[in-house]
Length: 92
Image (cartoon, rainbow, N blue to C red):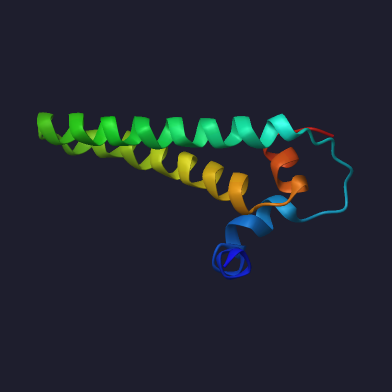
């Protein structure tokens, strides 16, 4: 199942797993990345509710931005390699 999902999200993962540079990875980085991703998805849901209640289309931009950031964090945190997680944090 994990290989199927990795293949499905390969365009996202390829961005963070490419290159031959060295990286420094800690197990806590993956946990924190997942927590940040969930928080951004939660923030996206709250922003969506507020945008719908206010009936303004301008409120959909933060919803989309928070959702994309949270989605990428969760995908890389669950399916990405150690190198992908380290590259999100910018560790070298």
